[in-house]
Length: 117
Image (cartoon, rainbow, N blue to C red; front, side, top):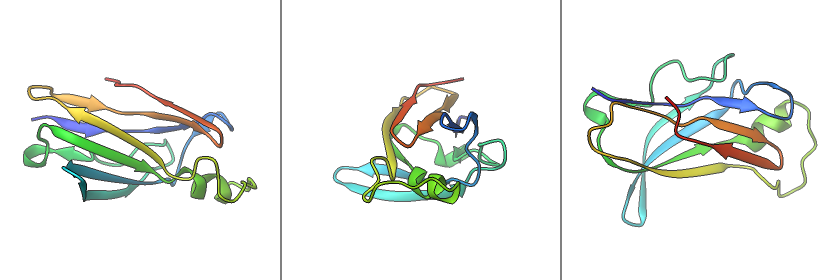
């Protein structure tokens, strides 16, 4: 069975993004159905896959990374509203794929992602 995983790297401090709230949503037309709410561990990863087994199915999904809260907790003063408060990544899971890894490299003013392995 397939699985969806993620991790966060803090480009501003050169370390894993620990204790970041992540929400996973399935996109159904114009509606979002929240499937998972998790926090990253000290390595910037979630302790278990966000999707796996019967829950892992093709479709369109969104990951919401609460980066603004993370940077504020690290002592950074962000403008209000913050340039990047919640980073939203919308992506598709295709049929027949065993593992999708969607990492986030983030700073208060930029982010990047890719489909990892």
